[in-house]
Image (tube, rainbow, N blue to C red):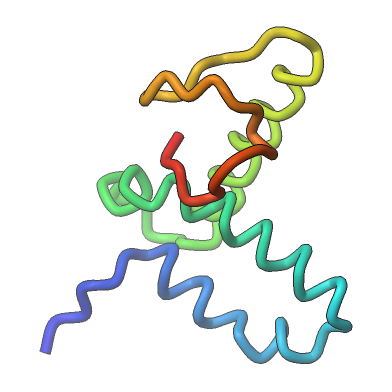
Length: 95
């Protein structure tokens, strides 16, 4: 049976036990990192890269760069022209 999950989904799942061992506040921070990575799951699936951890790190770095640009007043709009800051609204927006 084919696994329909993308590389970021599978990579995130592989960190489940690590997450469980973290203190509660660190689990929340971990979840935020995973949510940031998942914003780019479509691109990760299409990338053809073999290392899902690299895809996850790049995805998180993109989201962090967007947040920094927003704080500096150099807001870059997401593909859906969302005007909220990267920390506002749903973390499920793709961007």
